[in-house]
Image 1 (cartoon, helix red, strand yellow):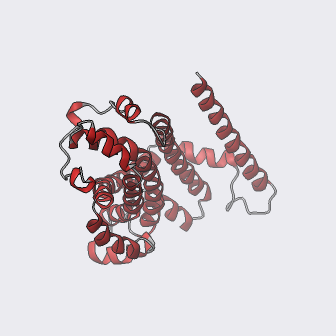
Image 2 (image 1 turned 30 degrees about the horizontal axis):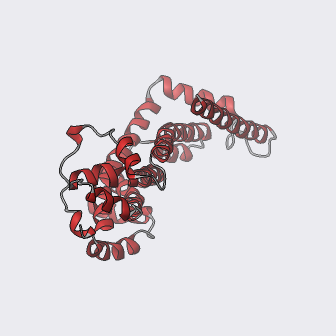
Image 3 (image 1 turned 120 degrees about the horizontal axis):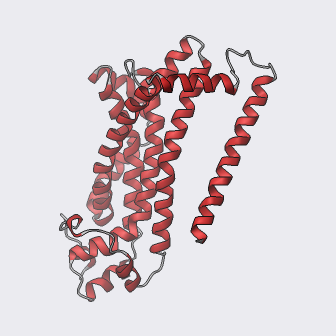
Length: 288
């Protein structure tokens, strides 16, 4: 019950913050300091948003952007989690991959847009690759940090109690590293949206929220631009909230220093059909 009230209070605080921000914007817009064409009032923004939702154009553009985000993010997750686990478990893999990550991660994802345009042309491919590049490194490094943070005593104790490699992986390592992985997924999702909007400015061809903003700027349609920003913020907030809640739930279930029995008893949420034999060996690295 207390968790319900905590979430209710959190939602109220978030709503209050949004209301204050909207009121501040409306007050500034009505001062006349900015021309109405450049800073429209909230009723004009609402009319533009509602009209684009009714005729379906905003939904189509949002669907195109969401498709690019989810596809690029999905590829980043598929590549980043296994590679991060391998880096955390095997020092040679870490030594091989980390210099490349250190060299590529500081390069802004949008710096690759002209290069990718030359290689792949305009369209979805460039935007998806930019999303993949932006989302890969948070996913990879958080997974690596989570695996490295697993207490070796848990693994040794589980091995001494007769746990096989499958049990070690799914009932000790995965639950212990899950908060890090969920945090990485949240960071990757946010970076994916930042990257896809910038890529759509430059590389998308007629579809996407980034293209809507760029096209509206050419015709001084500030109300359409702000309406698109509201849609972007709404989608990201709606998708990040479950990730934040999932991370909090994992931290509540798997504390920082649990007993082995706690780990064993509280991590039975993985169904049997999702428990394949891990493709790499864990025991030799532990000396068990």
